[in-house]
Length: 538
Image (cartoon, rainbow, N blue to C red; front, side):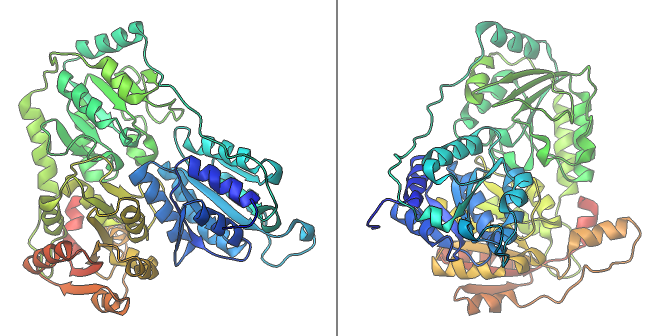
């Protein structure tokens, strides 16, 4: 233990009081005191292999646990490298506390090696970016965390000079505020129930704001009481078990599937928006319904976006809002054939095809979906495979398919799987990754091996940036800058000291997948897929 309490200790103790359990980064001499203080406060430091991956790990810890995670980048190139991951956390609505190293204050204004304005760089991609006040470090850290955790959550940055971090401090630890739930009064609750009861074809659109502890139960009771069919964004998958009779699937990115979904939206006479954040939606959702459509918006806080009309808004404790608005018996009268037809159309779009060679991506995802258990965690990277996976893999619990769907970061799924496995020890973790995405964060396999994390990494190997190649084809362009020579991922896995297997048929994939899950060891399954079916799916 340190012989004296330092400013870094005051910061770390406050982070711990707010529930932080993990810190990620790559050390430089300017952040060593911060790392020491975090570890001695009981915040485990995990050495990543790149700064963006460290940010992705922190993001996944927040998504899995709801606890703020810490990112500690060194000065100059450390923070510059991490900025893309910090920007991702802003658009994924993830509470991350960034403690950036900084040069000594006595050198400022003169010394230039590795020097630029950290706060200016971070300001556009954080909810707060500020220089550390060493006299009020714990208070300032608490203020930053209060901002990070205020809905919608996001990253904050304190720029910490090494001399300030090492300075003595007698400042007491700061505790998080105690917030009482904000609920509808009787008149507001009755007005909301009246609005729903008048509708004959109400439809619930549920977004990432519902992926918080305590929402799933009240949401299920609410939709069952009113007979509400439910569509979710990609990050809200599993808030209502996707095998539930009212679950209609996902929306947001596939032009073909959204074409069918928007027809259903257009035929609804009431839209109930639950935590429906447009950060996950493509531009087809701008003005997706007219201003005179009846809409009831329920969320933790205001929705100042104007992307689509939000109608009557109620903000506060979302589980309490749903409970206050729950009534029965069900009054919705959607024709059963209408909902069945929508499900059938989506199923036909994402059905497995017969590939000329290799494995059908849809068949691979169906095999995964057939095996999913409520305690699984899955991550998925960015690309054509992610859009398909969100419609082909059915989730059974909230937040089960972890992904970057705000900024849509390639290279996310492997480090996110590491963060998820650390945050929920013992849970089966499956990472669904395109080969181009895995090449962006391949070094993090070393972290999975070092910590012996039971992650099954499924690589959809087609040696191309399939989504961009598809877009080129639909624009009648020749493929350029999208094909590459991929490595033997199974052999690379062995070089990292983890298990690796290569498969080229559906039967071989299923055998390898079952064996990898049973082994409880980090494993790569290099699966050759035929991307041709993507053309009809998106």
